[in-house]
Image (cartoon, rainbow, N blue to C red; front, side, top):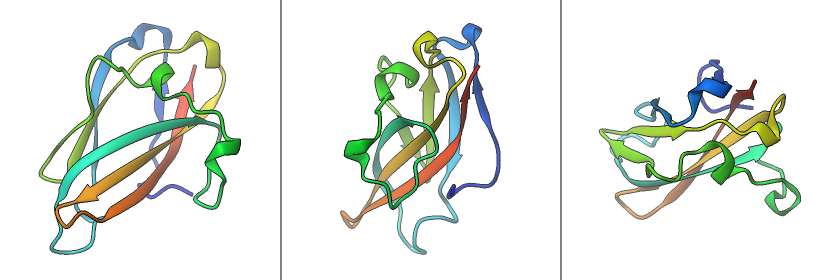
Length: 116
């Protein structure tokens, strides 16, 4: 289950250092709150909120460009991706750990990443 409208990100061989890809949280965070910071993690497969993440394979450094820190502006998060030959043919789930200006942390799932 994805917290975002259906769309797919396809990571292909030629997309190393590609982005930014923008995720709009305006209608997802509680009304009146703004995003202060975000941490993005990536896992192999379709990961559901009920999953025990210690049982999942984290691939954050394999598909999210670690040279460009995900940023946030006006509740829009920008992420740069890179290609991973290791996970070619796999699907991946992104989990956005959004911290609001009140300090509350909200996880959001995007499970439409395909590594071609």
